[in-house]
Amino acid sequence: SATPEGRGPAPGRAGGARRLRAILGAAGLGAAGRLRVGHLLPLVWVFHYREGLSWDGGPREFNWHPVLVITGFVFIQGIAIIVYRLPWTWKCSKLLMKFIHAGLNTIAMILAIVSMVAVFEYHNARNIPNMYSLHSWIGLTAVIFYSLQLFLGFAVFLLPFAPVPLRAALMPIHVYSGLTVFATVIATALMGITEKLIFSLKNPAYSASPPEATFVNCLGLLLVIFGALILWMASRSHWKRPPEENRRLLAASQKKGA
Image (tube, rainbow, N blue to C red; front, side, top):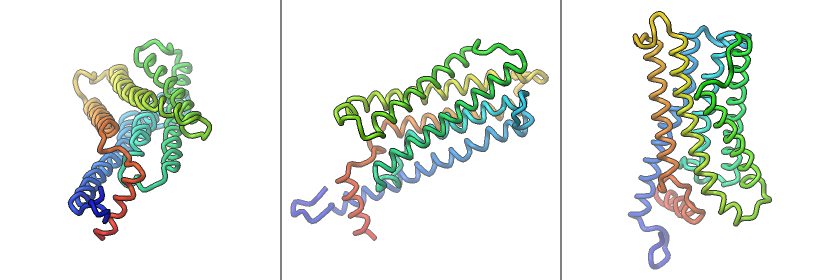
C-alpha cells in the first residue's frame, strides 16, 4: 500500500511482498518437480513391471490407461488448476493465462479419452465385461463432468460473449466443480491402480507386498500428496492472483529493490 504522502509502497511491506513471492515461488517449483516425477513413475511401472506400451489389443495397450490417466487427468489437470496461482505468472496478461488454463485442460481431456479407448479396446479384445466396477462408474462420471466443465469454461469464461454478471455468478460454481472433479479423479486413480494390482499379481500375490506392489503404493501416495498440494494452493487467498493494482505495486517494489 502507499504511504500517506503517496510516495509508493512502504519499505517493510515491499520487503514482505518479495519474501512472500519467494516462498510461493519455491512451493510452485516444488509442484512442478512433482509433475516431472509424476510423468516418470507411471512409465517406470509399465516398462519395468508390465511389459511396456503398444496398441495391439493386448496388455501393453491396457498400460496406456494408467499412464495417460495419471499423466494427463491427474498431473496436467492439477497444473491447469493452479496456473493462475503460480507467482511467476502474475505479471502475465490474464487472457494469456486463460488460454494456457484452457489448453492444459484440453490436453488432459484428450489424454483421458485416449486412455478410455485403450481400456475398452483391451476389454473387448479379451471378452472382458466393461463398466462393471465402481472404479469404471466413477471414472466415466468424472470424464463426463470434466467435459461439461471444459465446454462451459470455454463458452462462459474464454469466449468474449458472456456478460460479466453471468461470469461472476458462475465463477464459484466453476471453481468448486473443477476441484470436485479433480479430487474425484485422484480417488478413481487410486481405486484403479489397486484394482490392477489385485487382478495382476498372482505369484506372489498383492498381499505378499512384492516390489511392484510397493512401487505402485508409493505412486499412490504421491498422487495423494500432489492432490493435497493442489487443493491447498487453490483454496488459500495468499496464492490468489493479485488484482491489477497489486501487481503494479509489486512490480514497482521489485524495481526499487533491484
